[in-house]
Image 1 (cartoon, rainbow, N blue to C red):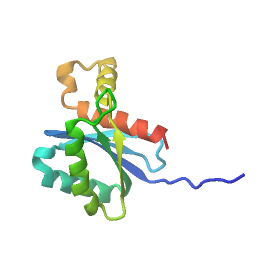
Image 2 (cartoon, rainbow, N blue to C red; image 1 turned 180 degrees about the vertical axis):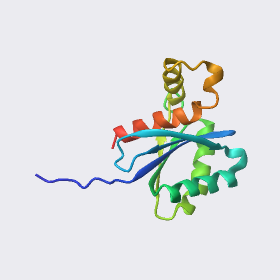
Image 3 (cartoon, rainbow, N blue to C red; image 1 turned 90 degrees about the horizontal axis):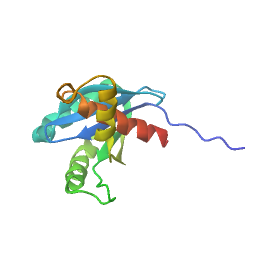
Length: 145
């Protein structure tokens, strides 16, 4: 029987938006996804990149997962092109940290459902929905690893 080596280390998940970027972080064993405060959005791209780099270095992140907006019919939306351009801008600055794109279809819907279940109405969800979506994205990515 052949055993495969497991890659460990924290994973940072990003749900990139124009105004805010949702953030989630795994533990170093890649077992748990936890929300983090949202960062700025693409309207402040240079600041967003600096904030991401700070998180990567402070938390010893070994992988960054970025949500890729895919339409329900499976095609890439116009937002997907914007996300790909942002990833192309970010990737060279991450040194030895891997970056991966992951289908983010329905993550916001699932996050909103979860937050409603926790008693947060739509108004209260506004400040945390982006990072809750990043948690759903990260949990999905972790489950596939």
